[in-house]
Amino acid sequence: MVRIAFPHHGWRRFAASACLLAPVVALLCVPWYAQDRPQLAGVPFFYWYQLAWVPACSLGMLTAYLLTRRPPKP
Image (tube, rainbow, N blue to C red; front, side, top):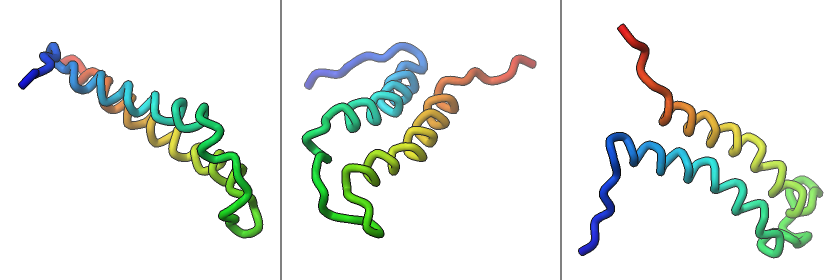
């Protein structure tokens, strides 16, 4: 079994990187969502998929920030 040794708080950086990279990968793979159906309130999937990533990106950025911020010094 191979174990990856992360330095102190390395798992936090890895998780923050995953939070920031997920929207990039999801939006760059256009063939995944280049279609009309299913529609949501008459809006084709292509548009509402992209718009759904706006709040998802904000949550990902907030999560990455919370994972990487340093505790205040006493």
